[in-house]
Image (cartoon, rainbow over all chains, first blue to last red; front, side):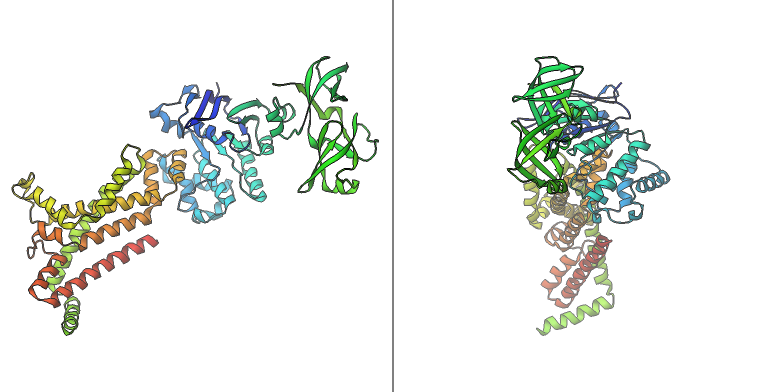
Length: 360
Length: 228
């Protein structure tokens, strides 16, 4: 039986639906990530699951028990869960007291509280800060205290709402380290919301993609990233090249798809005449000045229409008769002397292409 | 001017020499006001929490009424208490008229709106996330409420100080329902009023300075507690 289950769960604020028909199942011990853009409804869904809000429609089951509106049980059920919010509010007291709060509310004995709080602070590497007022901590430190404060109660389900949003890269990696440790060492079921799709991929065993209040895909991270089932999911997970085509030839698993009159080769099971989308991640495309590129079966000459620097990378749009978007390092772009208007060969392997059935 | 100067000198002498009469009146003032302040706080703290965390129609109106009562004249409360507790009044049978007890009751009624209003605004000043975070960490509504009050502790303490200040400094109510009976219900303010009318300016001034001195000590003590 799933530890957490929702059936057609929906929420609206005023007349506006922010969640529609969410059907989820999370098993005990699972690490489940909700990914989606900002404003997709991730926080609302987490708040509903943590029983901080009452849904407008649908049901929530915990261990098979309907807890959607059960007033009397809510406190007892809530005490089996803990939430780390995106912007955690720490109380105006010491770090130690902040972490001890949840245990005091559960009327635990003071010696047990001391041991558990010290272990939790040790886990998040904040033991040296225990006497500091929690309001004087930095963002990353505050987040670690919030994680310790939630973990100390040994929750069956730990909800993490954007645990690393608005933090600097060093703090992000420290927190991810802590989370990875928790996932590795403890049997806590974790439901985390993140707009950072790669974080979801790194930490979660299963991912739900929430866009505009709807779960558009529920799959393993590898499936989500390689086989998005809709344009919205594909775009969100960074598959920028989504090309509509028709299968025109098939030979031993090697399929030829015609896209805007050009032929692309990939490996798939689709039959002749089937309408498909060809998905290519921009980082799987290499750019060269000559046609000699080794193993890539797909090579197209095109003209660079736009170059956008992205930190150490450059996003290059190439018109090959059909639009392609490639992501290469700034250094490669300089070495190749790429400029807008210049000609370039775009190359990608058959294995870099994912062919999927055309949706909607 | 000479009168004022002489008054001040005598006042200081009376205080330094721990004049029994001044000390007795000051002690009674302090006891009555501290009792009413404590009782008002005991009522206002949970009531403030209840009003703050509850959602009900007319909540804003209720808060406006509470704030309006900040400026209710002390004699009006005196009149109300007088009507209630006088022999012919509905609870006249309790025989509390002209006793310290009825003065405490009057002062409690007088300062509850002020304390309650200030506690409500103190609670409004606390980040809403505090109570919600507490609830998400397994606090009951009561536990979350206590935590919120704790977060607002400095502003709540200010509310208590203000309440004490209003109680210790009021005269109309104490005079009307206490009766200014020597050795029984005479407080600093009623004594100042009486001594001034009798022309004993020195004693009135001594009592006035004592009153300020008590207020100073109470404030210093509470401020020290705040800074801890």
